[in-house]
Length: 235
Image 1 (cartoon, one colour):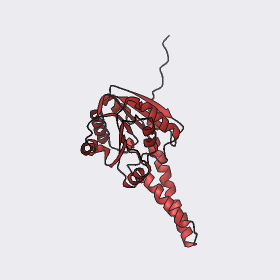
Image 2 (spheres, rainbow, N blue to C red; image 1 turned 120 degrees about the vertical axis):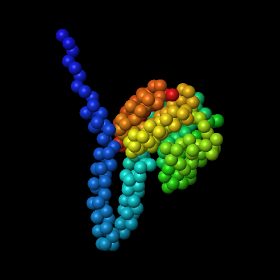
Image 3 (tube, helix red, strand yellow; image 1 turned 180 degrees about the horizontal axis):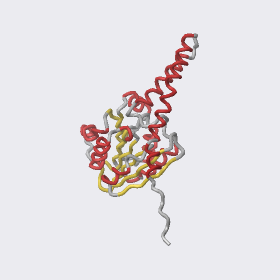
Image 4 (cartoon, one colour; image 1 turned 180 degrees about the vertical axis):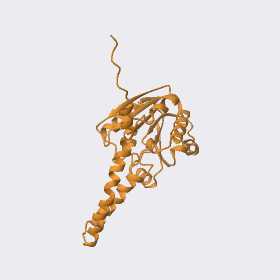
């Protein structure tokens, strides 16, 4: 007697791929109402209105900025999972895509060798300034740049090869062509046996990782907002 066929997994995968988009849409739906409430508070002379307005501006940056990977800082559980996946004990050159304010950056530095080097590439200038002010380590360099042009960004620093690339950029917001281009350049940047570690809220990267790396695995961290996939690819 033949075994019953398993139901196709595609519907579940489609649901996961749309998770990040649905979260963003839900947040945006509440923005107009929040703006109305702040406007009413200002009219009534509410002394907290200015503070609420600043908070609203910050939320807008998180939602609308394509260079922002998350609506909340990465949890300690996600950060630890990323650092462990990177396996930094033997790494001498580490490149971080999209460090934001340095939540993952600081953990990477804690795990790295005393003679290692970390180059963090951040597109958002506000985050870059905050990152530079917060992270003080002689092994650390923060630069302004677009990861889609990572080869050009690293060239002035004399960095042509890296042992590890750790990413917090929102790949789901890039076009398919841009994702492929970033992964191609990342694979070229990595030394043989190097690792690319990234987190995200969708499964968009899976087919492309197969094309650019010799092997990869996927973990899922539920103790994060939103819950996140962690992809570890080996060259």
